[in-house]
Image 1: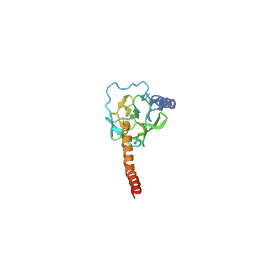
Image 2: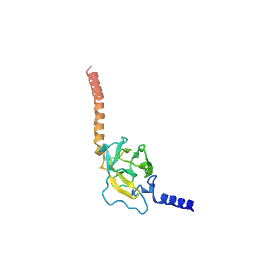
Image 3: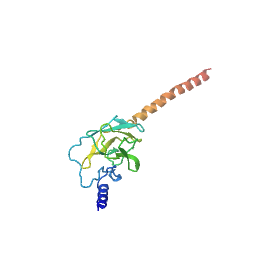
Image 4: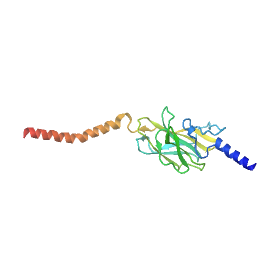
Length: 194
């Protein structure tokens, strides 16, 4: 009888809570799926800070969730108007792991256990090539029954927005070609004159 009771409790915990990370089904709406528990209506005591306001394809961005210690997390990068996870995460910090979102095995980061995480837990995100502004979105749980949805960072813009970087690169390429072009013209003038 005792064994049956323990098995029932374990099954209920597996069905009603996720101590080892968010389920893949939470990727779009970022709801923890804790049975019978709703998100906190108060403003979140958390904020998401980044080490930059601009991003560039392939260049890592450091992301930190600032606030009280927390046990659960689901963290994604998104573009405005879409619920798909964007980019990939580098090796997750201790007590966290990758979560496959939007078909990307490294599209999100979630908790690997209920150990406390805090301001020293640093996540590293690697952007793909795009010109759309992005932001980071998180669900943060202090405990199973106390969590906040839609914890959001400021918007990061692509360093190459509006072709400015491309135009600069193009003019740099022309500047490299000018000495060669000048040399060829001088050589031809000397050949004609000589």
